[in-house]
Image: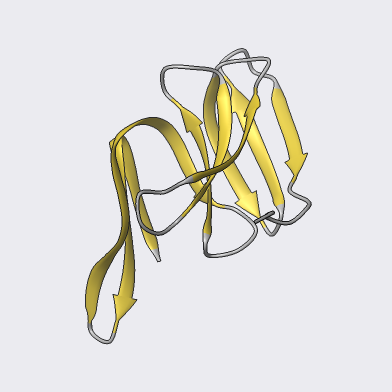
Length: 103
């Protein structure tokens, strides 16, 4: 999968030799995005508010979890279930995803 984010978020998925749309939300103002934990999860920091959100990579990118950040994020990176967020202040925040989705 590939994710493109800025003013809106688009997730593409490879199907054979073509890329098809897996998910899209044109209303999200996103400052940074990464695949988080599993290919079906996106971690994203919002451009207009100090929040980290975890969203699905399909459909309209439903929000699964959200956490207020103590800073304005400038970047983020994920490896496995760990997410690292770089703040504009120079601080670094490290988080670990845990739990499972409830129905």
